[in-house]
Length: 289
Image (cartoon, rainbow, N blue to C red; front, top):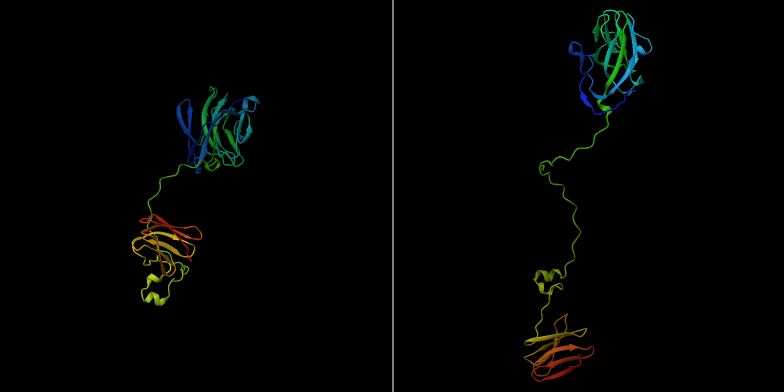
């Protein structure tokens, strides 16, 4: 039995004519030149489809023999989707001058021949490509005398759509940037902002200083130095006036208290204010209330 393989495929547009190698050199023949469908050729290791010598069924004069190609016939296995077959056809032991024609089993016998011989001619091969009938068969016709026929398959054709989809190719380069599109429709109005922190009268009078969100600035004594907070009021020292001031941070209202000479640093201990007097080298304690 011959091994079968599928080493490669190549596309054929239309039904290509076969290249026939015979005793006279390179010949060309086609069993169906009118076919125009696109197919892919699948080469296989040669396998024997028919040998009439094995069962004594030589083709007689004017006889037609139908040979099933698709499926498993002889040593060959051809898929049911095959549309044509590539063969090496050999005639052996011819008894009269004649010719052999190979054609699709569902068609009328054409007037062309694929092989010609004279009586007693040695075994003569030729390459033939024949379309298949819808049932996957071909016909063989012998014009005169008797002759044995040997058919070896070396490939077949299948529709181009039968093969599996190949892998996707690499992404191509990005195209140029398109033109800017038209402006979109205006969106809905946004939510209202926060309310004014000052009233309209203050705005009209440009009293931005009354905005509670702005930093407040209040007058202090001479050369204020240190500051502390007792939880309610702000305290700070005034070095050059020897005073300690208590200020309401909301209104800026201020009350001054006497301290030692050149008061500088002060701290609130939770109940009293303590002040350092730099020039007097003393510390003063002051009740904040």
